[in-house]
Length: 236
Image 1: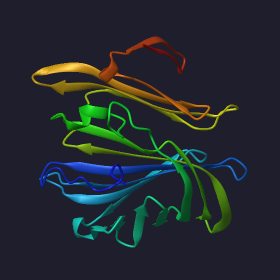
Image 2: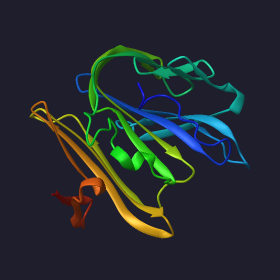
Image 3: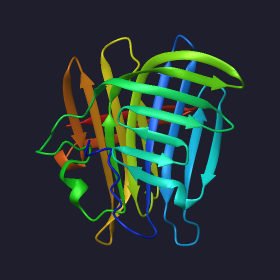
Image 4: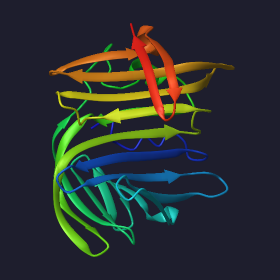
C-alpha cells in the first residue's frame, strides 16, 4: 500500500498523519481518527485526534515521540495502531477496535495511482494522498462505558509535509442515495516563489472514476458561500 506507508521525507520540521473516518448510520456513529507525528524542532511529539461528528467533540491526545513506531505495515502510537486493514484506538475518549474490508482505492491516472498524480513528485510543502475512497468496517466501539457492535463505511487519507497550505477547502463523502464517492481538496500552494491555486477532485460513480485537478487544467470556482452553504463548480 504505497499511499498508506510512512513517507518520512524529512528528519525535522515535518509532519505526517493518517485520517480515517468511519460511519455507521444504524448506530448513529460518525467518528474521525487522526494518527500523526510532528517533528517540529521545538516540540516533537506524536498525537491521536478523535472527532465525534454526533457529539460534536474534538479531543487531542499527546504522546512522547518515542512511542511513534512503524512496524511492518502498521503505524503504532503506544498501544494504538492503524494499518490498511485495521484500527485500534484506546484512550479516555473512546475505545475503538475495527477491521476493514472491500477497500476501494483511487485508480491510476496519468500513470500514477495517486490523488496528486505527477505533482506528488514536485518539491511542495504539503502532500495529500487518498488511501481508500470507500470500504467496509466492522468491530466494537465503547463511548462513556457504552459498548456497541458497529459496522458501516470507511474513508482513509493521509497528509504530510513541512507546513499546511495558507488556506484550504476539504470535502469528502461516500454516503449518497446513488453509488458515488467524492474527495475534494483545494489549497493555496507556494511553489517556486509563487502561490498557485492547486486542487484535485476525485469522483467515483457507477464503478467509473472521473478526475479533475490542477494537473489536467480543470477549473474550480466558488459560486456561493452564504449562511453555511457552499456551492462549488468544478469542470473540465
